[in-house]
Image (cartoon, rainbow, N blue to C red; front, top):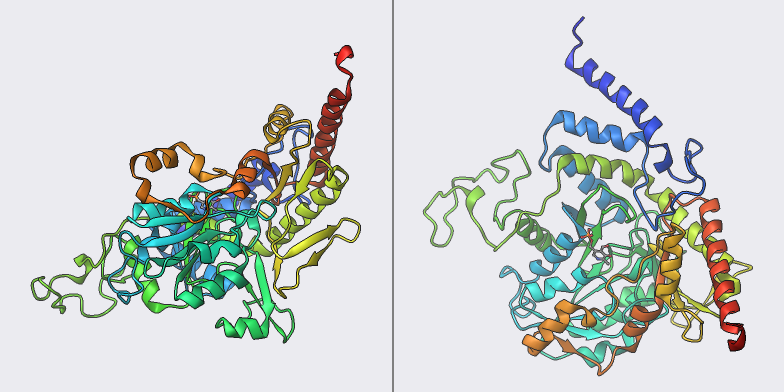
Length: 510
Ligand SMILES: Cc1ncc(COP(=O)(O)O)c(C=O)c1O
């Protein structure tokens, strides 16, 4: 008996789901009752993809449809992500790095007002420590990154140094990441940008699901009156997701991130229809046309344009207003992403829960470690699991990418000793990515060859150096079980006791 295509597809998907339920059971969220760990003492990665048969079936279904290039799934994904965030548009791309490149490139468009358009030699303020591709698009576009320092306890840019970095007529934008799921001081950054009419690009790659709130009076002064969808802190405050305060923001969907589609990312365009058109153009070869995939004549004037030096009626699909790229992901990736978006609330809650569990478990070691604090927090009460806050009236709610700690200088070991020990015990950790990027070979080389290509707003960046030398982070991803985290806490405690014991052993006994 031959099955009809629809029945065949249903059968393939049924078998796919059965297969995935069996072979991927260790990848389910930690809270999923069907999750099975085959090896109780197996490796504990710092992060990884968390999924069920739903994602696998979505990928197979989209593959059977064989649209391949960004199509119906991509369109739906973009709308669903934009709906979650409450922004005008999300444009799917093939990585967070591509998203950063597009966001910064968009600001070079000749379609923007002359005084705001980034030109070669213009300056963009960023911070010294973090992930390299937050900064490299500035250089790739011939602009000058101007570095301020990081606060070692939040991992974020130091808002108090922004004015030091500002150069009238030169500074056009601020581009920085919310470090490891900890929002930077948006109150200070937005006020600075407003004061000097600067663009703000939020690298939200590690921070999907973080929110930032401020008193309504301050928010309205800065131009914000609405909460993000699903967020509410009462009538006197405005609360919004990070990635929705700036002009543009970016996401990464690489597996360790808050949702994944393998490789992938998005540029979030918060409000501006013009920026949407520009980012789309840069993403799609630089073309002037805005036809969706598979459509040829959305404007109904495909052969009716007379633009510049082009022959009259030249096909609009092949008219280029920018020097663009092609940075789109595939449709099956978007299909996976759509299932993951539905899991976001659960994933965000798990990341918060895991951070708290690790923070409480490691609290007795605070004489050896400084623990990361949410921006605007001044302290943490391990008993209550609550933070005390500074007097700014601004608050953060972190959807943690990782659990960052700094090994205190007086500890009898360094952060890399701890990292090595945990790796030997099959526990994954990471440094704060590139640490102080200015010390990375590519930046050292550039400073040697073309010192004018970048600028330091401050003579020293001790915070970024501290993060590079002393910081290390554990995972908080939703695949971590309580047992795994307890094992991490135990291993760190054992390591510390061992090192303290060795440090306290009299020299004559060694
Ligand atoms: C802050 C930040 N920005 C950008 C990226 C780049 O994302 P992708 O790996 O998807 O290119 C990362 C990567 O983890 C990141 O941490």
